[in-house]
Image (cartoon, rainbow, N blue to C red; front, top):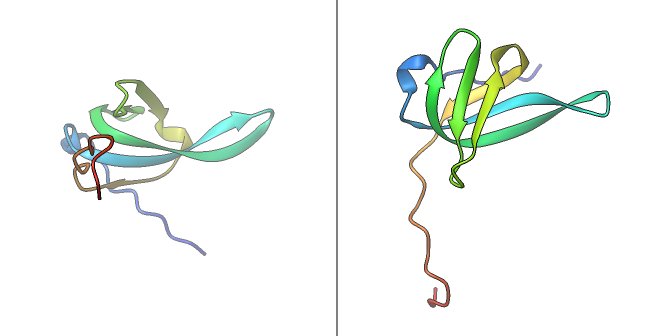
Length: 82
């Protein structure tokens, strides 16, 4: 049996996280991930702000796994050699 990490708590607001949760896809539950800054967390939901600025609210009842991740690397400027 696979064991998933569930380490994100309300104390982690302001940290970068990844949250895997189930979404409905035409009657099927499929897992999807959201990565970004944890803006709020309580007993019922997580709110994660993606890099794009979009905020995603995740129902804890649909949570599969969550974990803290390192800060995002700086974006590269286009056209710059690697």
